[in-house]
Length: 227
Image 1 (cartoon, rainbow, N blue to C red):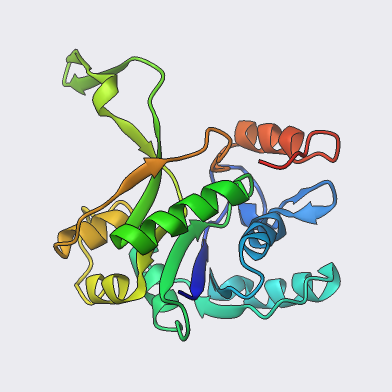
Image 2: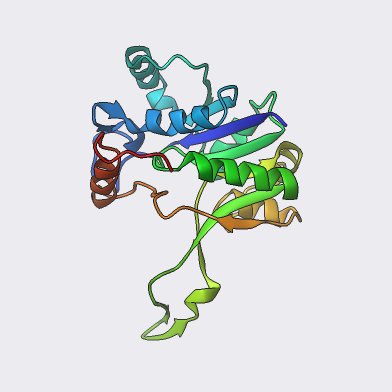
């Protein structure tokens, strides 16, 4: 099967307190987005790559990519009102992929082995999403009271979430629903099953300044190692 990936890069950087979207912040002189793109090229040098980006930053992307030395062809789709609409715009640009991954641009620490594992599982089961177990105790709050939850029954969901193209395209024919939290929830509502597989503890989503500090340490030349 041929592979595609839709990289969702519609963040504004508000929670980071940054003046630009998180994916354009630099670590060791390189924008986060390129660490992410390079991981998928390492997985499959012929992958169809679609980047969904806010229209306000398309010119900035063009300037950034021209000065970066990154020369792999990337199709650009416009970001939408919500993640659902952004992903749908990316799906509309698909041409070749039989398996389609959807990945957050600000997860640059995803390992090639994790990407391979998720795509392999999706080829077999039709869908696959990486998850890791919850380590901390959790409580459900209701008004002024709370109760403990069984953490063994809870999983933290990551990306890339990978699906057969036919399943993904059919699922995204639906209308937007506020209950959609990720691509798996869209696919599930369309009546398809979701296969959970082992994720990666290092596959951090960079959302806060603290996340950025951790990623900076892990992506430094002294710390990088194959996983």
